[in-house]
Length: 272
Image 1: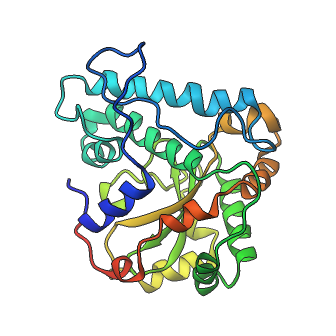
Image 2: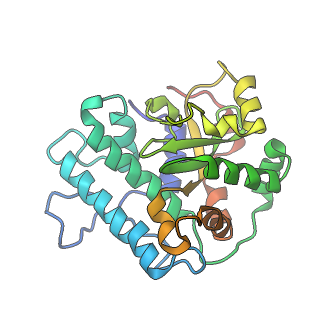
Image 3: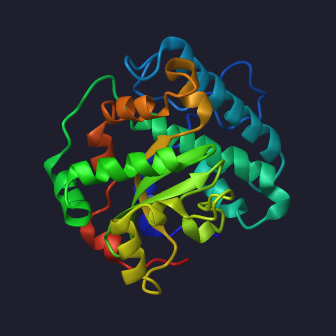
C-alpha cells in the first residue's frame, strides 16, 4: 500500500529518515540506525538516566536491530519504518517485520515529542483544541482517562482526521495509528471497547458524525507511551497516573504544532 502524498509529506516532517551513518556494531547491510533526538540521557521529572536508557536507548536499539534482521534481503530492505509498517500491515506472514517497524516508529514519535521542561502550548494549537474538546483541560482529562483505562501495553494518540477534527485513539502493542493499514489494534481484548471513543464523548460524537464520510487515514500529532517499561522504573507499579502527569509537563508543543498539516490539506480526501 502506498502512503497518500499529502500524508507522506507531513509524516516526513515529523519523522525524519533514519540516519544512514551506521554504528560499528551493525552489519554493513544495515540501513536503519538509532534516530537522533534532542534529548541526551534523561528527562528530569519524567525519565531518570536509567529509565531513559531502558525506554529509549536500549529498547530503540533492539527495535532497529530487529528491523534490520527481518528485512535483510527482502523487498522492505531500505524502506523507512513507517512505510514498512503500512506496507506489511495486511500481510500476516510479515507480522515480525510489521511489529518491529511499527513499534520503532511509535517509540520514536513519542520521544521526539518530549522536552526537558514545561513549554507553553502554542496559541494555534490551543485554538484547535478548543474547537473540538471545549478547552485544554478537557483534552488533558480525556487523554489521561483513556491512558489509565488501557489494561496492557500500547500508545494513546491525539490525531487529526480527514474532516479536520482532533480525536483520541488507542493502539495496543505495536498497532499503528494509520487506520487504512488495517493494523490499528485499537480494541481492548479484555473489554471489547475501542477506548478512544468509548471514554470520550467528544471523540465518540465526531466518529458518529463523520461515519462513512472519511477514510482511514489520520494525522498523528501527539502520543503517549503506556508500555509498562516506560513508567515502572521511575514511578512504580501503581505510578501510571503520576507518569502521565509528568509526561504532560514535558510535551514539546512546538513539535506537536509542526506535525499539523495546514487546514486545507487536512480536509482533502486521501486514498485509502
